[in-house]
Image (cartoon, rainbow, N blue to C red):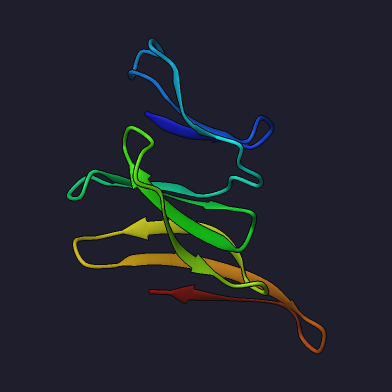
Length: 102
């Protein structure tokens, strides 16, 4: 299993019984969404509110996939062909807004 530890700025993994906990990446801010692409053996995560990154399941080969200064990434999902994300932002005229990206 994998999880984001926003308080300590890292992503960890462990066996399903909780043993062998390991940090695969650290030095992050605002770790929010995490998902795994099992076909490509990659983990996708959002950090710094407006970014999406991917890396291999051991924490190597980090790729920056998305940056948008105005849309806060809430969740990420993957299928065989695409990465999807939901994002929100504040619109001064109509309040909070959101969308799904692909």
